[in-house]
Image (cartoon, rainbow, N blue to C red; front, side, top):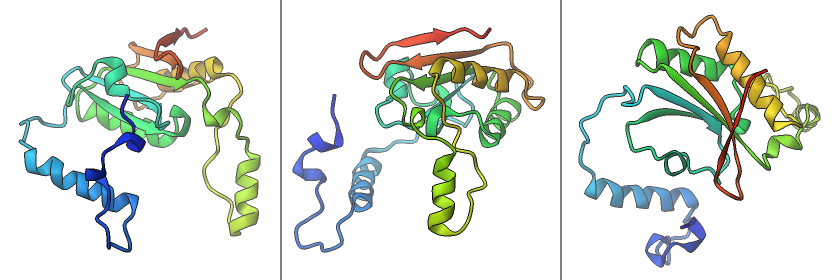
Amino acid sequence: MTTSASRTSEDAIPAGQPDGTVTDRLVKANTRYADAFTDPGMDARPVLNVAVVACMDARLDLHSALGLELGDCHTIRNAGGVVTDDVIRSLTISQRALGTRSVVLIHHTNCGLESLTEEFRHELELEVGQRPSWAVEGFQDVDQDVRQSIQKVRTSPFLPHTDDVRGFVFDVHTGLLREVLPR
């Protein structure tokens, strides 16, 4: 597996550039990408008519783990892969405007949200003087959290296609998915 820590000096910011940042490195990489880029001629509708909702954890390489190619799916990611109002918004647009019919929910082992509580919001309020409008959505039981996510998708009045909603836990040590069945 290649990680950014194992990249070559070609990716490094040139010497003498005082403000070299990670963003500078990303922009440089994009220039190389654009030099070889050819328009694949796709539209925004995913070929497999599926939307994947997953955690933003950097250890999850969803396309590789699921055997997906560019254009196969819509990918919606956030901390914990939590089905929030914004995820429902994205799924609604994905289904109603762009033709998806299936939803795959992926949480994972060793998630950072397993150790966060709503106390995190209180600490932020004390630090910055304003309470966040969003919930942390921390959890202790990843399977139960997947079940809750499945239920939120299946009961949303905005989603017309809720018969093919499945949830999984990705094991960050083995790379395997384990399906979580709703109760």
